[in-house]
Amino acid sequence: MQDTCFIFIKIWAWLFCTLCFFHIKVKGRKLINPNKAYIYISNHNSYLDVVAATRAIPGSFKPLGKIEILKVPIFGLIYRKTVVLIDRKNAENRAKCIQDLKVELAGGQSILIFPEGTMNRTDAPLAHFYDGAFRIAIETQTPIAPIAVINARKLLPRSYPLDAKPGSISLIFGEPITVTGLTEADLPKLKEQVHQVLESLIVNNS
Image 1 (cartoon, rainbow, N blue to C red):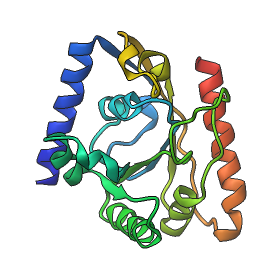
Image 2: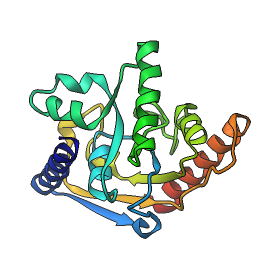
Image 3: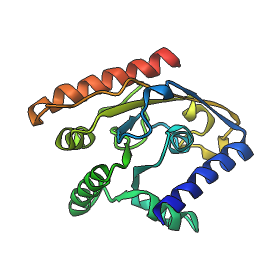
Image 4: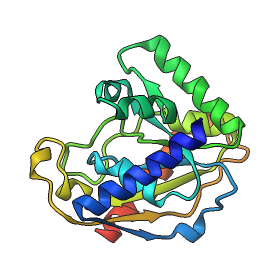
């Protein structure tokens, strides 16, 4: 059922982009081994970020998604099957999400996390990162694959979704970052490293 739902999401993302005239340009995908599990880390500026990632990431993956999306008619049912849901207001739920993501990685499934926690509303390329994604990476010894999504905010701003306009979204894969041998003590350094790499990808490709 999970694979079927993900195929549906892939088709939906393609149709959505086609009908709305959103063109997805991908760079650096050859850096990714489609037979390997990664923790994809991406910037978050627009609802289009997930759409672009769905079109660009090779193979299937499980994104970490907000529970509020379940309220969307019909799509919410598919969303429940393809996303690890998080209720940020519920500490017990947050802890369960971490375990669910670890289970996915143990089964060879990649995951997608937006470490800023929510959409970046600042003028900076990236907002502050939370620890969760990096703690999971260290505890499961899973490599991190940074992804920069460029121009999505201009085409579909969060605050003014009715101002959506057609155009191109670029998605740039960075070199995967190994975490082999890292421990909890290395978390701050790893988080800063990934932040710098992703910020560089955004700045150099904007």
